[in-house]
Length: 544
Image 1 (cartoon, rainbow, N blue to C red):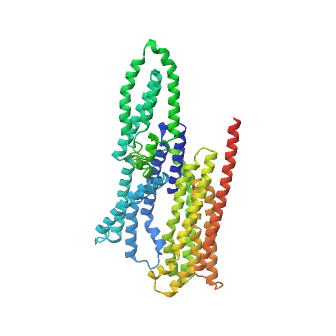
Image 2: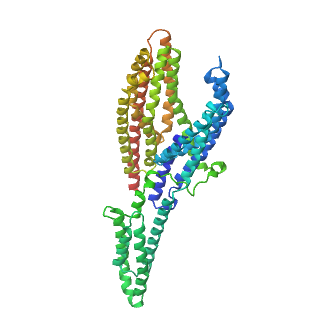
Image 3: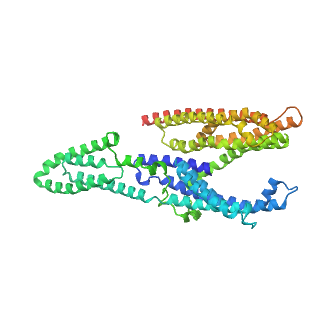
């Protein structure tokens, strides 16, 4: 759900950009807004479905995880209460996740941060109020569950308000900019139709109006003064005796205005700050694009109007379901297989060491996962552009930039891994466990050395919607990686090989290197295909 939302919103922005570039500014950001709203509606549906499943079958799922033998009733009941309370918050959690993914697709990372920080504070207050209560349904684990659930709905309310309402200052700025711009264009059209304005004076007024300040106030005052002068000038010039002069000057004025407008648009560096530049430099639009983005497009009640879900956009989510699900399951299967081998074939020392190493692994993984999310935010915007040489070069440049970023991130994490032997002393005092942890360091370093490149490759493939390829590859990994791990377990149990967590992480690092190589070879092939399509498109256009 989240991967599809990020990709589709980013792609919708690219489509809207193409429409605006072609002069269809009346529908600015329409597709992006519709995709955003559809993702929220589908998120609520998915959240309700999963919440219902967890609430109804939570007991059976817990027995599977905990094991039915020697099951402590007190622990089981406490866990079941926790799961069922958390299931109440699942609809809010999925909608929040969809909104966050949509913001990432719009390249807005600050808005989700502000909302989720506020939710974390609500969660903290809830923990303080509820956890200490003696009631089994309010205190303890149940209290922590209630605190999290309440914080999720609080975050949902804050997020929806953030998306629906713009700050007053932004509204006033947008209104002023639109009003002044429309008045100027209307006055310019009227002046050309009448053909009665001296071209030098009008050019001066147009130039002065274009040099507005960032808040638009100076331009508005200048225009007001010229608005009074222009009708008087028209009345003074419009007479039968001056018709011949007006006819000769009208074409000159119009030509001069067209040249001036073109020069102002093409050369903003000459001290001229146009309205277009003002909008681009607005801090609201650059740093927090999603704030108030759905104003006029969405009401809270629309979340429950499932019959009005945009079916054409909803169908665009379907291609992501199976491939991304297979990718997620295939990715997790390797971790599960490693844990299974450690718990069933290795001793307690290796199990303890594996727990420490895996804890560090979980802490370091989000650092490189951010590259995949970033690629999914930027690449679809480029990929959805019309086929052209510029688009091809942009995709190639994006790949080169992300490749460098992945290499830098990998080097940075390698530096962090060197501290693991020292930090592991805070997790255990057993020298044998520490030695086992150190034995896994080479495999862990190899894994993360190319981890950034792996996330970059995967993110760019998702950004270019190469879903079938990813689904097939991870479908193969789902079977191959566990098979190799189970073979390793068999060799350990038969005493053929001295297996430890260092051996497991070594094999896992080899899997990572193979995955990186395949991803980047695939990206090179896609780049060559894009170049061929661009040449073919260019040739067909020239023939026409």
